[in-house]
Image (cartoon, rainbow, N blue to C red; front, side, top):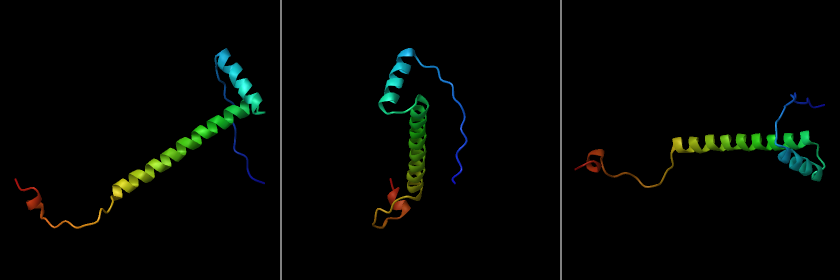
Length: 82
C-alpha cells in the first residue's frame, strides 16, 4: 500500500465575492472547496517545478555552448588588429 503524503491545514481569508464564486466552481466540478484549492495549488507547484527544471536545462546548454560548424582560420592578433 503506498504511503500517503503528510497534510497540513491552511487558513485563508477571501472576499465574500471570491468565496461565493469559488464555491460555485467547486460545486460545478463536484469538488469540495478543500479539494479545489488543493488541486489548484498542486498544479501551480508542478508548473513552477517544471519551469525551474527546464530553466536549469537551458542554462546548462548555454554554458556548454553550441557548435556552429566551421573553423576559425584567423589568429587572435588578426581578429583584433586595428
